[in-house]
Amino acid sequence: MKKLIDYLRSPEAIRERCDRIFTLALDDKLPYFIVDLSKLEKCADYVIQVMRDDYPNLEIPFHSRWRHFEVGNVSRIAELDAALAEFSPLEKAKVKFDLAIISVLLDAGAGANWQYFESETGQVFRRSEGLAVASFRMFSQGAFSSNLDFPLQADAKALQTLELTTLHKGFQVTENNPLVGGEGRLKLLQSLGTVLTQNIEIFGQENPRPGNMVDYLLKQGNHQLSASQVLKAVLTGLGEIWPGRLTIDGVNLGDVWIHSALGGEEESDRFIPFHKLSQWLTYSLLEPLQELGLEITELNQLTGLPEYRNGGLCLDLGLLQLKNSEYLQKTHSVGSELIVEWRALTVSLLDRIASTIREKLNITATELPLVKVLQGGTWTAGRKIALELRTGGIPPIKIDSDGTVF
Image (cartoon, rainbow, N blue to C red; front, side, top):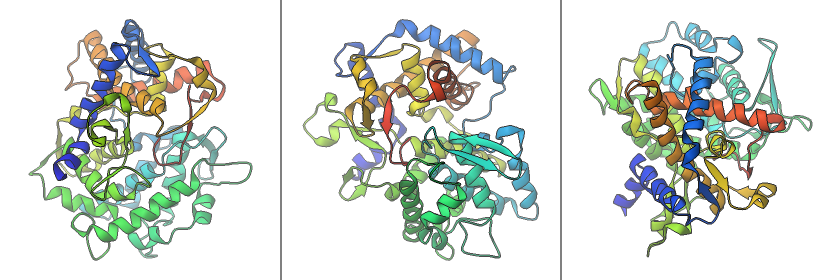
């Protein structure tokens, strides 16, 4: 069973299982979607234009949480670096791990009616950027630290005792400013606090905190780490925080779901792993590791992120088409086969969109890895087309999110 669990936690499993769904779609053997690859070039051209608008020289950074901390032309990263000026490089990396992990876990869809007013700049932010700025300010104020003398950390004690009122206050939640999935986010952070105390190999014993994963990773690589090694550490270390998910031998699989079209004798034959937040988190941990002088290898091992911006791009530009438009009127749970199918097809299509973009630009996968295509890229393009087609830029499909998936 350990072999199966390790497989389902690997990028290879994500691609293989998603590509099986994709092959079924090409043969029109899926219940909800069909794929129209004749729209692939149109989609690639749309994304290239978005990339050139934002990055004229195609010097694109990684798709990570750190981009959101720069929203509104304010360099909050420089602000953080100034606060860490007296810290050692290792401690700086640990603080940045603490911040990135907390912020990513708080990053599920905020809903169209929530916003955050940043008093430090007088600016208002919404959605993912708003969540990033809100979590950055909470972190800077010591909201996730139990040590008043060391506010710039997230530790087990503070996370385990975190209250919903504290989270709501930090995110400025009111009756007129509702945040989707607040309780789900709280439970996720509380679960993180518990997991930190249980997995001392990764998170340390004396002061368990997410940032101690840096020590664990440094022991694995000699100035070099593969992207998959970082993802494996994230999935191993944080796997138990996800609520009510599929398990094997009592091991929580996280962002893994079932689609009956895969068939097979065992239930696990129908499992499709995505690990969206874990991969997004992995992408967000690479930069602090690079700042320590580590070389990150095999970036293209990780997959595209199956969330509603990338999936919405595929649907809005016709690469994906729903077989029955009535599904657009209903709200779907994240575990429904329609959403699982949509996410699986998104993963496979992102690889093909990236490949088409590279061909058109005459750029190699090393020069333009998937993590840059996402940033440049498909996520931004998905948001742009959503704003063009729907008021408020809402997703094309209504999702009932618990705050822990998208």
